[in-house]
Length: 496
Image (cartoon, rainbow, N blue to C red):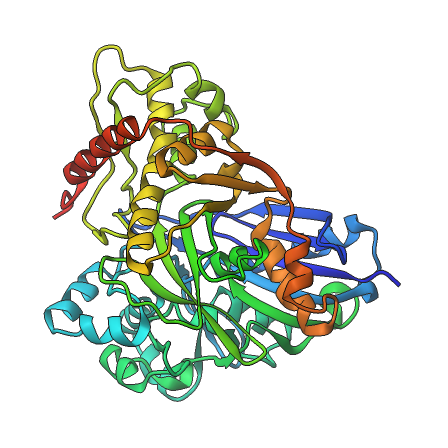
């Protein structure tokens, strides 16, 4: 009998569910957006109940549209927006506040205080991360400090913390499993990535009770059954990974030096460093890619906060395009930006700058600048930010990447992908299935229950749809990039 795998892909702006067959082909997909909440400038929140309801609706719809019986599902895998922080009551399962989203800058003052106290080097060494509002640890501390009596309840074990994977797993299993995998745990500022355990010293600095934390599990492995009433039959929950690590796995980047870039709300470039934990001195992150069969795979990562979100801004903020797909045709109306640069530092700058006080900037405008030039500058900003990361990644790893595998919504934009290849000077490889994040979650879960035999079988099923080769002269590439670096400097420190 043919068996299927259900992947739950809980993203920043929408929840989706995808049913895959045993060859990694998409049988059905359902997606639903949910509200973005902006209480104050730089602060971003989600309603955890909206996340849960949208994920539940899409899961049931995907199974129904696939035309498969729930009993034909071999397993369920979860992938999720990372770092987004939820606190909920152990007894009732109810959230105690809105989720603080990874994009939120609300804990910038706390991060500054921790740096001033001299803690940055310790966090960097233990976690592979920088002290930035991006990560979960300071978000937990902020919620405990801002809700009266919450820390006392947390110390008693009444309040639980989780990233979105934990929250979904708790709901899916009826509160029987409070877990997170190592890839998500490595994004919290609380995990020692050398020992792969929660770090008591870091918990003490942030004053976070250990009783709140989930159990650590492998990225691939049976956790427990999804309650029968959720999907119509009990199905093993067998895989969990943060969205960028899941995309890496879905792209079959199993070899040391292989890299992928995901063009979603943000842009995330990851390179596999195998069992070697490479420490960055220049602003990249060291993170856990996945844990499988008792072995941990490490990655170097660069995180761009605003990637595809700049296209949403053109659509929703400026009204320049009717839909995201329209940006390519608008940008193609001009051969170049004529010196215009757009730095989309709407919520600060991520790697390698880590400047929460940077703000969005457009420079080089003349009387001849129009809609097309702004659209092209927006797309080019995505590619420039990715070059920031790739150059540093190659320098610090000592590895020259022959090509970059790409996925995510904006990777369908041919103009952007060609400019990306031109700006990097390496080939850009777009796979046949762009839903690499969902596919990675499915692969991790399926490996745990025997849908696939091993990594070799998974790698053999990766297929190339199109290769973009660099066509720009190196001198032109470097000249354009130099202009970008000048524009970035003008965006930095603005909110101070």
